[in-house]
Amino acid sequence: MTGINLSGKEGCNMQIIGLMVFIVLIPFVALSLLLVGVQILSSPIFWIILVLIAIGFIAFDRNDKKRKGYLTSTIGYIYLEGVDPSKMSILRLYPDKITINDIQTIPIDRVKKATFETVTRVFRGYKGIPVKEHTYTLTIHYSNREGKQDCFTCRSKVNQGNLHMDYMRMEQKINKLIGYLPPKENFPNKPYKL
Image 1 (cartoon, rainbow, N blue to C red):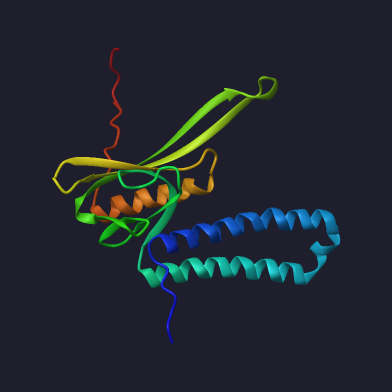
Image 2 (cartoon, rainbow, N blue to C red; image 1 turned 90 degrees about the horizontal axis):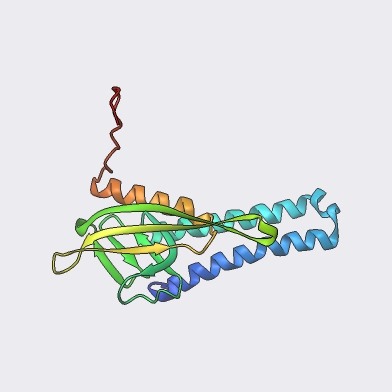
């Protein structure tokens, strides 16, 4: 029996397609609830189907992790030479390396640290109402092949809140794996003059 090997760009595209289908499925269910009415909410069949879809999505993700052996993964726009920054890419953390689209590889012993940042932009929207835009950025600092310090960033779309926790988890796992402790801010505990 032969299995389907989805590695590289095909695996990245399949995971992104799976996420998009799930994202499209939620508004479709909400719209059908509005069209059919609230009576369907009392139907146990509706809830069984909804739970089965959620379990299938979680099982697919766990099976993918187990089969490929990575610790965690996330998606975003990656700004690095050789990667198209206009397309979503997948960033995976393995115990011994970090991969981008399963094509570019950085050995974990060359990684120096990972940092996470939230950039919030506030502007005036319709009728002067303040609108907030959040962009999440994961930056990975490493030594390139020549031994020089380099870094690349993985950036989310504007207000893509589901990546907030993914990026934080990725930063924590990378720093824990390489043994990096971020410097703590030292605040004085005794009175002093300014």
